Length: 123
Picture 1 (tube, one colour):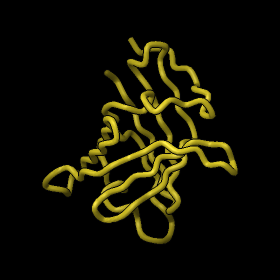
Picture 2 (cartoon, helix red, strand yellow):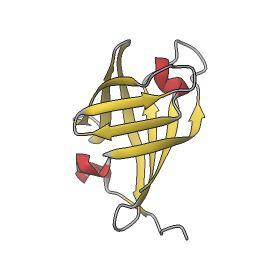
Picture 3 (cartoon, rainbow, N blue to C red):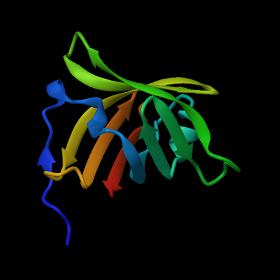
Picture 4 (tube, rainbow, N blue to C red):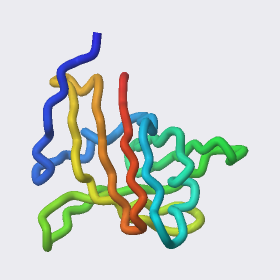
């Protein structure tokens, strides 16, 4: 039975709410410009500490990198700064919903390129 999900106040978002394995359940590719490399084809993303792992079907091995949670001072919204071997990307966190105990969650990301990802976590 699915858990009830609650919106998280993004201005007070702790980084540990984002940690863990996430499955990509939806993606919207940018209309123009280059896609975000392995992120545009990702099937799973894992955030652990500052380590980032991206699984994509065309990659023989996961892409490894680093991530950090930052707050945009202008709009006072959190974003992820992702550092991968082929470059860096920024993704605005547009929505995070999670169950009371954090067992389940839905994370919506909007990248500067126009790529949009919706991630789902079920522990």
